[in-house]
Length: 253
Image (cartoon, rainbow, N blue to C red; front, side):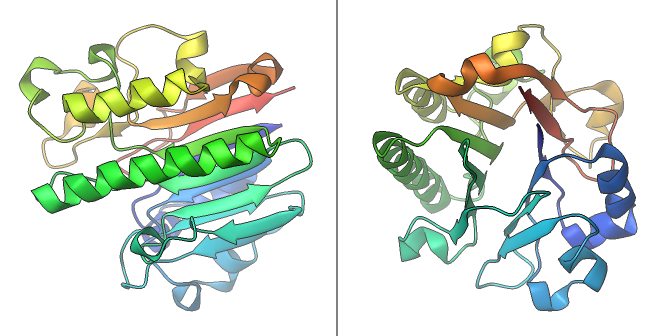
């Protein structure tokens, strides 16, 4: 079973750049998309009902902002949107999709760069995510948490760590939360297989950073400990274009 996560930076723009052809050719069993920036009423029939997939959307109240979508070949046991906390759910950042073998959370975590209030919001969202996942695990669920976390965990995870020590996305308080996330039992499955440098998932478009591979690794699949042995591989699909992010994948036995 192949699971892919991709921040497409606008699903309508991605469609114009060949998203549906890519989906057909790559053929993931589950695809988690972040930053759709659209309500279903704004989307084409081809995006709403792609051949061979069930699709669920969670859109922000504000149009053209945030949003997530989950595509799956198998019909899920259940799908729910958000954490049940309006403060966070109004931004359309979470889809919880349950299958018999595991529950997958598709999450577009907030960006904290714009102002101090948004950094506080991001940290509060992190805490709610941790609480929500702990409840799922206590109820016996095996969990995969995929998406754009908007934080690089370690210096190896961005090209210029020293220059970004005071920038949201690499602040000590953000990185410390990922430490706690891992301590609570989530595994960064890409780093489970690969500890090489220069492995990035996001590049700044304005500076042409992708061509020089001056990037950040901020897109992850975290899996609960009880799923680690079932993961065969985890990869960064950095040859796939169409967004300022590239997809990340994992393959389960």
